[in-house]
Image 1 (cartoon, helix red, strand yellow):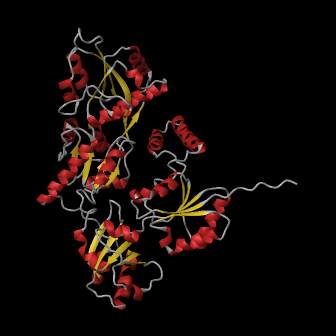
Image 2 (cartoon, rainbow, N blue to C red):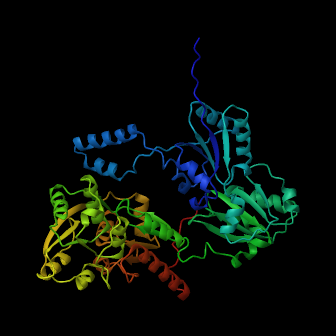
Image 3 (cartoon, rainbow, N blue to C red):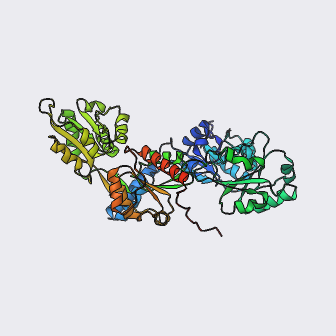
Length: 547
């Protein structure tokens, strides 16, 4: 008699998502999230944490085929708007994120059912799994089955959020989840600070309960929303004004009550950063904003990425193919890179032809700026020439050697660049005696307009600053969304970008000495510090109150 084969159950992992900041996740939590596709998540888990789900899991081929079929159908039908929409969609992922709905027993039943199908499952909660009563009940329910489970602790909101607000809790604090049953008498009798997790609609009730059990009306209170994120907001008050302090705040709140809340000014570190709480617009080529956004977040601002241009291959690959063949054959003395996109385009052709960095042997590399040079170095190649002053085409021309028929065996320069690039560099090199082969390495096309909400923020001053990294980002942002409001600070990466901004009537407030993304953001932060010290920051934008 043969026995029926049974599916080995997967593992259910209860993962703590921490206070919301993805940088606060444990190494184990990051490992589990990135390697698991099926996740049941609480509604209050941050988008930053959810973005890590299944990043190391291969995308199912059927999803890729489905997206390609949609694109093919749109192209065949000549639906240009649909083609543009599909190009601007995020790439398909393996992530299957589902809401954890229902009572703990019902959630646990879903987890076990999926695990018995052989799937590894993550139950993702905000904070720490073992500090939420409902999650503890789920863990117990799963533990009564044959399905194996694991608990991956997370940084508890009770300690993390006050720390991000600058509040030193010490070792004697007490915590309560105000969304469930609370022993108010025990809280009030505690000698240390009280940390309460609740929502805006429950603040007044919580304050009333605490007062009824003997807590003084003048007890210092700090109400914090979006704790640990760049959008964090903290409002100070007393028990008597607690509801009013959190009236404008949405979502889950962490309320710290006690003497330490009144002393948080001594320890503020998160909310004191140069651009804390700012909304900074990042109009960049799609897929190239990560470095800038990370740096903006380091200075405390919320980066909002709006792709204004998309990079596409040239209409005909023949030019680039001849150029790559010429590199291998020794046709060029120099290759001049004017952008990281040009570096990427050439490298992709190398990979396509089975070549590597050795193909650049005997060819000198010049880069228009440090950002482009960094991209070249990532390929294991050291550029021979960079501008010593202004990082631009003009700056490179100042240091580029003229052609010498004795010293230079070849007089040709390969210039791979965008289809809309200016002629400044080509003309300057020609005047220096070089023969230029100007090759279209990539095309730039205008991206689809952003959402109506973003367009409204741009026009009405909802963004505190905007960082322009090229003339095309200026032109295209104005084209698809309109001119930024007069209160918005304008930061431009270099003189050409600044000139284009001025042509559109924009006041350029910040321009770094060197044309690099990181220096652009750092210069904006320094400018913000200067304005704050001088009391010259633009007044906060008035927002409509919640009803």
